[in-house]
Every structure is written in structure tokens, then in C-alpha cells.
Amino acid sequence: MTSDNPLPPTLATWVYQQARASHRYLTGPALWEAVDAAHPGLLPSDPRRLSRDWPVHRELMSAYVAGLPEIEVGDPVIVTLHGSDQPLRATLTAVHDTLLVRVALDGDDGPGLDVARIAVDPVPVVYYTATIITFDGSDTNAYGEGCEAGRGYREESGWWDPTHHYWKVHPQRSAVTPEVCPDGADPASWLADRLATRLGSLDGYDGRTFTGAREAIYPGRLTGAPAQQPGAVLGTNTLLGDALAAGRLRRPKVGQRTLTAAGHAHGFRDEDLLAAARHIGLITAPPASLDPKPAQDVPDAR
Image (cartoon, rainbow, N blue to C red; front, side, top):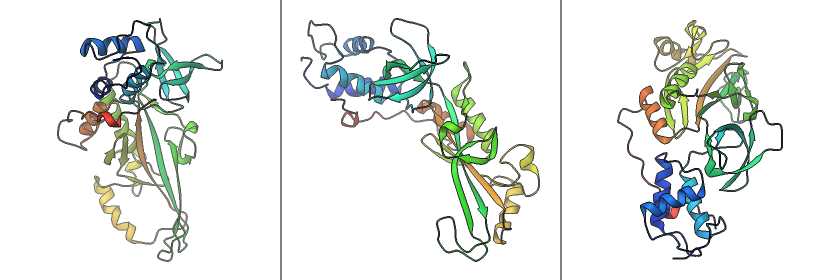
């Protein structure tokens, strides 16, 4: 095999599984050596120095990166620079391509630093979104569709900052502050605690999104002391909510507002998301082993 040959599917699957299992390789040479040790003789034997321009090298790196937790512009990250053992806190500011990103190091006001995606780890955080409905007494809903007279409403959905602006949503994620998992904390337990604290009862989850089961009525809240006041919250798992659910049959007052919310976990491993869902009670079976992504589904960087 030479450097111009495509990456064998066996190796693409192996490096993808390594990433999914949280086996971290922070440089291309380190990943190359691990693959060569696990599958001797399958990589090119070219005597030239390892080059990032080799098609097989880019495919190897792309297959590994595909298994890492997703990161998005604006996410807090940890960067390990080449030749340094000291991780640095930063914010992801751009994604150039599959293998190259730009970060802004904490405390550095410069233009940012381009680094290999393989050297970047996400910091586990939780963002929230919410939908606020305001009943306006009309006969149309938020989508302009007709409804029963007096039950019309307007709807606002967006990013939600329950700490600073409870009854307000924002169109841009950058306008809200995520909750950040502290160093040394167990990510799954921390995530379950934050979701329960912010949302109370949960209906379910899909991937990294956890949907709340409760509906707050202004000026109440989903959880905490304000949620215990009569008329403050509708929820499937509380006697108060069950009693108030019948109130939905009555025509709402003009100006009445309700709020529902969801939590979005960024930077968590799949096993942490499953463990959090089990801790909350959304699933009862132990987390199943992750099925490897088929080799043909691994992104091709060529």
C-alpha cells in the first residue's frame, strides 16, 4: 500500500470506534502510530516523513474526527497545542474544514489561532431553549391558522437564559450563557442534576436534547419555590399539574403567558447522555454498547 491508496474500511472503522470510546490521540503521528500498532502492515510503508497532504492521512484523520463529540462555533473548548502538555481554555470561533478549526484562547484578544480539530476537546455545557405563548383572545394561532374564538395566541421560541431573563427568549445562541460542567465533576450526574433543577420533570430525550414536561404560567417558574404557587405550573408528574390540566378546557385570559423549555447538552460523550437519561428515569435499561458507524458512512475528506 502507498500513500495514494484509499484508506481501508477496516482502519476507518477502527479509528472511528477509538474516538467514540474516548481514546484520545492529539496529533496525526500519534494516531498513525496507534493504527500501525493495532493493524500492522496496512498503512503505507513510504520512507518519506508523514505528510498531512497524503490522501490516506487525511482520510485517517477524518474518520477519527467523525467519532469525536460534535462542537459548534461559540462552544467553550480545551486545546492542547503541539509540543505542549498544558491544556488551554478557549472558544471555538470558526470551522475551516473537517480537520482545521480556529479558536480564541481565553485572555487573548488576538485574531485567534488555527489548530487541528484532533487537538480540540469540547467542554461539557448545557444550553436551553424555550417557547413562550401569549394568549391574545383572537381566533387564529401563531401560524395564522383558525382556532376556537378566544383561544388565539402568539408564540416566541428561542434560546433561553433562566438565570438572567426567565420570561424572555433570544434569537441568537450567543445572547445566552450556558451552564458549564465544573472540572472534576462526573458529566452524567452533573447533567442530570442541572436538567432536573432547570426543567423539573422531563418528557424524553432525542440525542442531546432533553424535553421538559412542565409548563409554567406567568409569573411562575418550572421549578423552585415559584413553581409551588397555585396556578404556577402545569406538569404531568405533579398533583398540582394534574389538577390544573383541566383548566386548559377553560378559555385563557387575554395576556396570559405560558413557558415550556428544553435542555441541549453539548460536548458530552454518548455514554454520558445515556447515563444521564437513565439517572433521570427516561430509560431503565443499562446503556447499550455503541454500534460502530459503517465504514461507508465515515466522512471522506478527499
